[in-house]
Image (cartoon, rainbow, N blue to C red; front, side, top):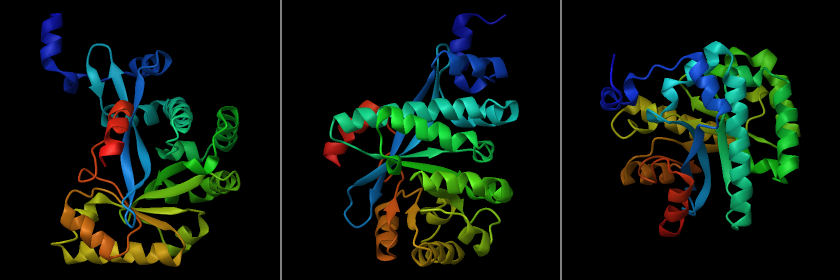
Length: 267
């Protein structure tokens, strides 16, 4: 059997969580949030932040979502996990409001979440309880999740928009949507996948896709947000193309709440 020292030296990458581990993490409040800033390309001011969940394990330390989101989806725990993330994000939003730093928060939602009619009502009750403007909450859904469940998700998406929550379509261009389907769904924001932004300066096809996404956003009255912005040159080119918003390591890596508070005045 391994000693505790052996376990520590193996590190978190050897930890393969079980359903019970994840259930315990949710119940014992081990999930914490990090925030990746999103900036307005015209003003270069903070526009909002993407909420990124981490699992602070008492033994293995900080565990990233690639280790547990798929498990949550496979075991049906994704609804509980999403509920906890949304709850934490909204409570954080209240804290920011008290500091006069009201910030729009983008929260990732899974395919299972958008087929649940409970979600719009749960969210409505939370924003009412904490007295948060629903338009400060952006729900991010991947293109493949939305288009894979379009018929069953449209009702939920429309209910969310009617309650004034904002909707963002993530990983756009990597899935299989048609323009007609995109037009049907009530999105406010189109996120351009990092696979295209990272290659746009030296890959003609990637550049064409970025340009089409920006043009499509304008025509459908949606904001375009480029993710994976990692250099000044890419940032400059996206500004030239009139992309609205950006996030990425050039602007900032994901930050804890305290780190974000330190970053804001410097930025």
